[in-house]
Image (cartoon, rainbow, N blue to C red; front, side, top):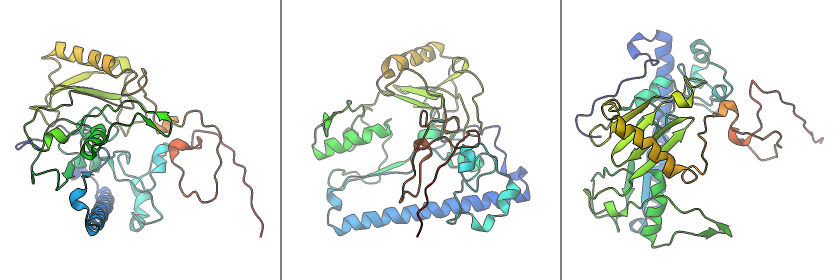
Length: 343
């Protein structure tokens, strides 16, 4: 983060800590305690993995990508947090009082908890938005540590070139001296769209080689192009429906070379740049990065599972991802048939 970076504005829906009730503070503090415990657990387990590699004597021959998260902090806990995250996907609100009844269980094996959205906004500092808002860096930007003693001579340095997670695979291939696969087990592969990071290993000031990148999730979309970033907020994670139609979305424009936090909207001052950017996005991403021409606005709550109308639960399966399941939420009628074995 550049020195002197200030916080971007906080979403109006998120309360300040000072105005929370005593019960809210008690519950929310427990939520962050559990999250912090999980973070510590993760760190320890990553350390065990590194120690195991070192034990083989192959650490110097290993390229490690340590990406701190898979997206921004999640606000799917809505305003109060959740004792069981599946209530979110079924559109069932949870109250502070109801969750306090299970406070001591929070984070244990009988829970599937999620912290309140205010913690997500705090966790995505200095940005405004969170996971699901793919058009804001609060929803997408994660720190990454690269470690390769044999290949990377620099120690403790920072690289600021713009890149995306799709650039990891081509970096691995180049480091290993392997060609891009054209076919895997007889299945023809789409061309890799990533750009290797290796050019930046030895030159912190090298010009970035990723010139454009498209982002989209639930109608929230953005396009990066040569230092400029055009974005629109279509739907918030804690709301069940978007506020306006796609055609009525308002676009913002940022120069991320000078505005790390995405807080200085230049759309009004530079309308020509803003108009050109979405047009460039349409030309470059149709049937390439998204392999489709329509913007996807459905969420898990709306039934992302799509045409899955029936399914079977077999022995040994302990967890069924929602997206792979039939629609059995609170707004869907469903029937179940079971066979029980005697003896």
